[in-house]
Picture 1: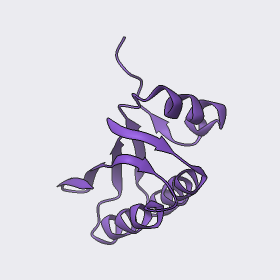
Picture 2: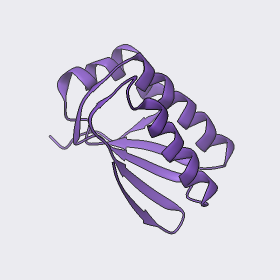
Picture 3: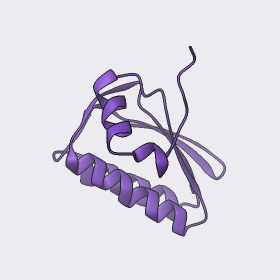
Length: 103
């Protein structure tokens, strides 16, 4: 998982699926970034092909930790249709900022 860091911001680039096999590692990366003072975090979903319930849960836990730190979580490049639909069916777009794809 690639991470770019600049000041109080970080961009995380997960690839493949965010699922039970790696969701805890994902959350730990977010916690580590917060501990470093990087509380404004963007997750770039360009290469994410799927998210299971464990992944959704860790995204929500990450959002809570970021909010408690006074930061902001956003998701960009939600390209995979099934993942995008999952976010909207679960109303995640109401609690996690999602940058819309250009038309």
